[in-house]
Length: 163
Image 1 (cartoon, helix red, strand yellow):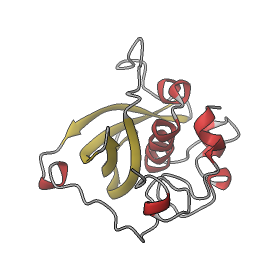
Image 2 (cartoon, rainbow, N blue to C red):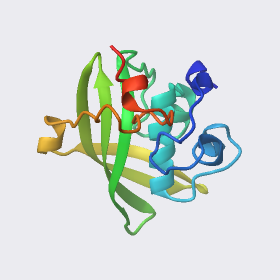
Image 3 (cartoon, rainbow, N blue to C red):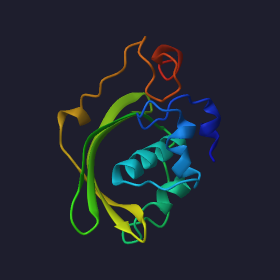
């Protein structure tokens, strides 16, 4: 596991409001398998937030998996909002979400509709369609006294909001 896990995270970054050890770390550590595309997407978001490249690539469908995945060190994932989760025929599912992040001090958001396939008893991320929306350009910075989006359980001003 990465060093970011030892940051004393109280809540899971996926937004479930559960303890991280009882949520996405079950999947990232290999102690369990995501039983839905939405759970896989949430655990992949958490893996991005924690820098767990191996889990991200292991859950990426072999037809679209990158050879080398490098995460931007300047990006800090700060919040996830799942908008829709649907299962289609042929073991295919879609999850639409907005992921907030801090990119070198600039708060931004990504709006995506991701496609997943269920093969050999597991869900895999295939690809995603970036959706144009004002949320990409008008990211909301949390208030100083709001809980920090990183999942630490601390107020924003005492966590990621420090200058």
